[in-house]
Image 1: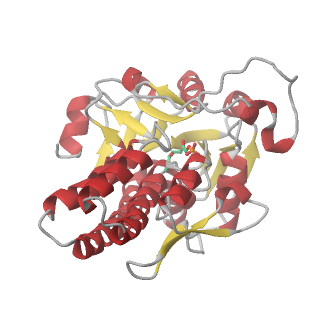
Image 2: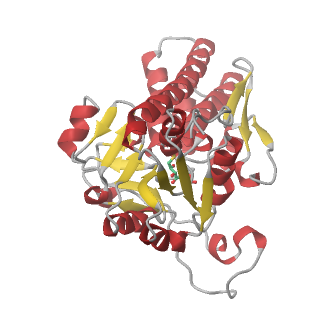
Image 3: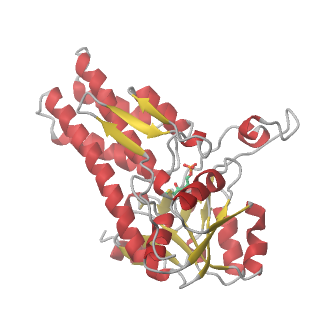
Amino acid sequence: MAGSTTAPPRTMRWEGDIHGALRLIDQTKLPETEEYIECSTVDEVWDAIKKLKVRGAPAIGVAAAYGVVLGAQTALRDDRFRFDNRISEICEYLATSRPTAVNLFWALDRMRKVTSDCSDFPPTEMAERLLEEARAIEHEDREMCAAIGRHGAELLPTDGGVMTHCNAGGLATAGDGTALSVIFAAVTSGKPIHVYANETRPLLQGSRLTAWELMKRDVPCTLICDNMAGQVMKEGRIKAVVTGADRIAANGDAANKIGTYSVAVLAKQHDIPFYIAAPSSTFDMSLSTGDEIPIEERQSDEITMGFGKRTAPEQVNTYNPAFDVTPASLIEALITEKGIIRPVNEEEIRRVLEL
Ligand SMILES: CSC[C@@H](O)[C@@H](O)C(=O)COP(=O)(O)O
């Protein structure tokens, strides 16, 4: 099949003018139901991010930016506090929703900068500027996804299996995705790729979201459980692995959904190139290595009561880190909207990203 045929799912949409609201596809309901929710308060956006109704590093950033606009609506009605101080508090609050994806903090910094750049504007005009900035963040994310796809497509094999982990597709961004954008672009260019989607324990983003997206877009895919990755590679089915990332340190170490590190180690063992696709908003050059990346720990019932069914004894001890860090040494190349970073080291990152 040459070409994926349909458009990506619209992960989120701002509806209306400055008095509008944020409409999100509720990703916790997929693949069973395609249900949309409306967020009209900052708390609703915070909750949607925390509970993974909206998830994936770039999508979290875009949602948080619109969350600031919702906060601005309330701040306009409340003249007890200075408008710019309220916006700063709202940014601080939204930043507590999830710790690992740096895109969240990157987007909130951009929103904060609007208030400092426009400090002499009246609040109503500042609020309009905040909406413009959130729209720009969303638009730029869509463009970054497309550019990542264009750069990365050439790295994928002319045919054969490509493995991915978690969901780095349209649902995780405002556009076509990061890792999946590379796959969609390769398929569109005529490469008959077959995707192996790891189910991604414990919350199954790979099976619930990636398989759903790929099937919706007619890209051949096979779902496997995480613990099958080694066997599938050993059988010679995988020619490349491509995943997304939530934060990349200055030396190229990359945090992504838990399980990614194991997949990268397995890829090394089987001599399979392991790629990470991510926009420049995912790089955190203030951290020298991946050891400094904060790893979110989530509640134990995600392991013991996955999707409402008890699968472990009550009171059992659990540990549930939501991300892991793949060292730069295991990453063949980083695929960004500005080009391919190879070899993966700080000098090359700075050169390609023009930092
Ligand atoms: C393009 S998004 C890349 C990552 O954000 C994705 O792979 C991932 O780890 C998402 O984790 P999630 O916990 O579902 O937000």
